[in-house]
Image 1 (cartoon, helix red, strand yellow):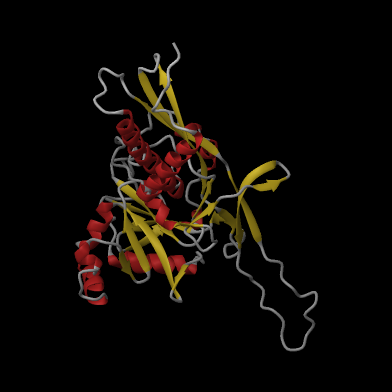
Image 2: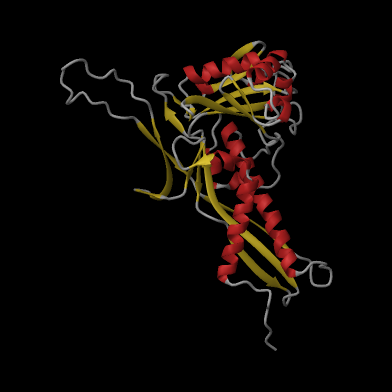
Length: 366
């Protein structure tokens, strides 16, 4: 006998649920607040594909500063023009998906509508969390074969993504480590347990970001950089007397003072965000941590300017529903197509060496 499934959704209804899930995911996604379609964004979001000789790809365009001195007086201008040095970074696309399924009519204590609602909420959080994971790993230059706490990743899905092969370690001239009271060239093997972040290091980091010509973020005519740190690093700073004086005396003594509210902290033009998914080694087992003996826990601070990360985003996830076992079981699956890349360019300030375009990486002990 034919039957009617009153719980079935039409194509339009599925699209609404798909968009609602994507809205929930973007609301929960930490990196979403730093995305924009402009070249001035920390994470430049590409929503359209570019036609190239090799087919249709997602491309992020980088344009370096001009280096020439121009023309003096009435000297000829024609023929003295400078070609802008532009670089195109290809972003590979791939698809991740996940689904949920109820156990059956008898054991299911919720209605079908409740199951859809719970599925949407859980799948939205899953999608937001996994995209945050991949973004922080890409920024830090850590292979997707590791989790964000340094442990080996058991699930093979992320290492198999097409853009996983494009993850690259921090470039030589834009990779530093905390070294006592100052900064040194990046080398995780030389990090010690006492190499924690202080206010003095923030001063040095801001100097390095400027002299290495990392393109800053602009707001109200002022230059800023954005630093993503582990909560332990922010705790280290809050215990530093110099940092306390800089924040408490340098900002208004109001409830929105970040020292008191625990909100975002801005010090000397460095806007500091803490997040638990910033890469660290706490999940790794010695001797696979950092330091000479591989037993020092560390974290990788990403100091970002414009176009620190590129992301191709091809719209809302696709929502699919399926019945099993003569409609006694019910499943929902989502697909999302996207990709990440950390842009690089031929650095005109360091002899053309290939460098990370918009991020300065600083290794810190925790």
